[in-house]
Length: 444
Image 1 (spheres, one colour):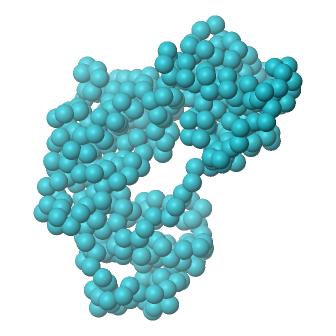
Image 2: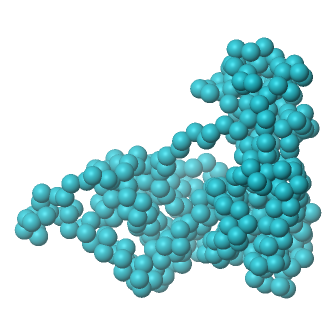
């Protein structure tokens, strides 16, 4: 039986039953309170205690993770540290150890691979596995999930619990994993859809934020039931984009192929400790972030054409940003030279603020990136060393040599310019939940 077309009327119960078979195809595993759980695994004295992970030791920053025990006090990710302390006097505040989180992540993924291939690493604490025909019956899928959950706790760490969702497509498996936390296991079968979803909120669906929720409301859609009761074509029109009906089919259990994506930026940011929020420490940190981003750019085989410098001052919730065009390059020295032109704009903005220059966060992003495949060797490489036409050829070669030295001998074995009187740690190697730093980044 073919799938409903975009022009079909609202499907009746009989029509829904006529959908092609929607077998269980995806297992989605979400680690519970991941960063906090790793900290409790590393320090037995913290187990069972309310704990948050913070980027720096300061009341002015926010929690980047909260343990299951801390969440019972109403403390969540992005709760200000001062507020978390007020809610729980016995709160443990653990400084972030991003390298440890990456190491545990790789151990967990390796453990999952012993039971089922990992199809997609969705984030530092989420993986998706596609189920084959010999493992996707309800009984087999549930048994597989229980084995994986038990193996992680036994072989990686007893504090590392997870919630697992099983469903006909990855979106629904992710939704199922969120339906029972912590340590949950929920299965959504094709014949239950979309009815099992009607108790959820629109914002529970990945991709629906405040703006999309308002857009749907303007079209008369206030909940998942109202969205699913539209014809696919009308649901897509309410969504308002090309392939807007895609969500309608996913919520009905159809397993659609993923749309291709491409990395478009490479960047790093860093929350500055209170003692490092002046102009010169900020400038040096921006240089370190730039060097790290440029090293990643070369490792991935990309070039960039735009540098963006952005930051957030202590007294302002909005971001300051400025950008500068670059020649197509992957040379650290060219990008640093551009940063030297951008930073005075940030310095001027900071000087005009009451209390002077006090920056809480600094970030560097390389934009308009493209593959460097097929680059020709420079015609100017054989020119005299002082010839300006040969300069970038030499500095790019030097940049690549620095990559190799730092990878072999450790972070900042060699660097460009001062390091503010010492090593700054793994600056910029924090974990955005959608991006997992490569181990090489901790050597840059």
